[in-house]
Image 1 (cartoon, helix red, strand yellow):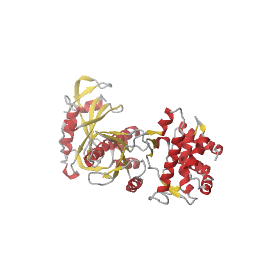
Image 2: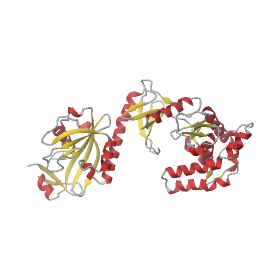
Image 3: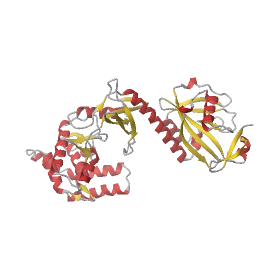
Image 4: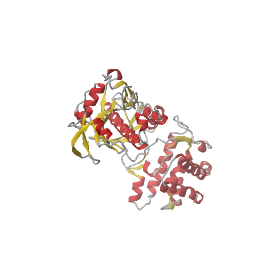
Length: 434
């Protein structure tokens, strides 16, 4: 007889216990534990249940079981993992990640995660319970779910539950990754915080005793290499520097990801600057931005950096690196003008970057079109002796602005407010005085 404690629907103990079979038959509320076992490569262990099991025979599942009467939840999960896979864990190594209420089968699951360096063949399997164990990457779990493979119990979970578990796994995989960052850089790191403002979700803010840094995690080595090459090439400009590891490498490889650490750019973002200055720019700021953008284009003239070429901006002779995301948030004002976030960088006609910048800085629903400062910017971007170049390139400004807005709207999902902002810019193009 296996006694388990009985609870009410609010997870309050009712003061008595019953045999597990009776609890199930009467659908009484009880407690259950489960655990993700994750290795230091960020993969999770699944176990294939024995074929003679009453529930889910032969199916792949995570470690778990019932909480015996008088047992704490952590005691229960420690017992389960030691019995089933021979893994001994200390209580302080077990991390609680959720308490989930199953309204269909009337139990509360206490979900845990812990980490191990054991290989598959090193687990001691309880043959009465399991056939075998295997590590899976989180991407593989998502692909199995997509294929709706019923050999895996998580394919029977509802969508919300599965997505919640995947999110928790990724967060904990990131913790491992960040531990790797701490051990591979010559920095006295005191905090690593995820940057929730990042649209990619791959950015972390790092603080040491003396400085701040930004970490970006790339899925693709070519992308990481491109970013490293661009930042190192533009070392004379005010942009983030790439920080080397202890081994003098410019990136850290971890579990198929590529980690690049950048210095933190001091200064004030243009977006904050104009808010503090009654939504206006001073002439010297506009002139400085124009000259720094020109410097960026001149330094990278005809240098593709292995970047994608923008097809709609491939009509003119003068080509360069295009930042391609010159928003008010990505331009910094300090004792000089600085730029961050080259992740969207492309290669193409330099004037395309000007079209993008003008739309971000000088066209908005709140202020309309700032033709005066558009003219000031262009007059200082081009040299006085570049009359023909200026005339040729400016003839493409409106076309490129329109093409770029279409490119953005077709490639992204925006909320209604942001979409309206882009549509306003698009509808204002013909009123720009160039």
